[in-house]
Image (cartoon, rainbow, N blue to C red):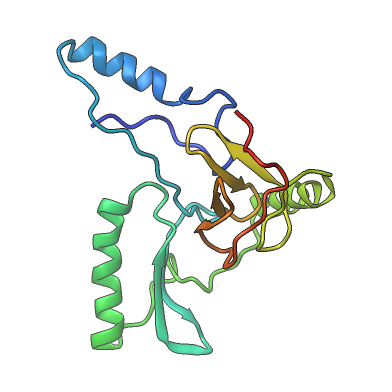
Length: 178
């Protein structure tokens, strides 16, 4: 298994497959007889401070727990999340302040994201995200419309692929860009 460098959703290089090429070259050099059988990509929620949200969703929803934002460490961090959530649910152990979803969102990245979101709202482009109206960017590698604001993704025909958008879009173009 070879994993290319990470990037924020809709922030991949403009050329299709550009992120995978260095990984493929390394694999070919190390294992010259090997052939790639599968290629896939995943989008991952990354909290502003880079630390996962694990715990009670909010103080107003005492029976709702969340574990997300593993920042590409889902295989290992999900085990930690399982341990923490089990202790909280079964043994009424208080939340770990490091992982609580209710920690402060005041982080420098928040202000950068707000500026970028404002720019996407003002940018005259098509189509728009069904979540909050941000400009969508065509992702050539994944053949999807991606929202840089909050991470929603849509198929080429506009069906929702990933949240937070709950409804599809109607692309203004008959065909996505090639």
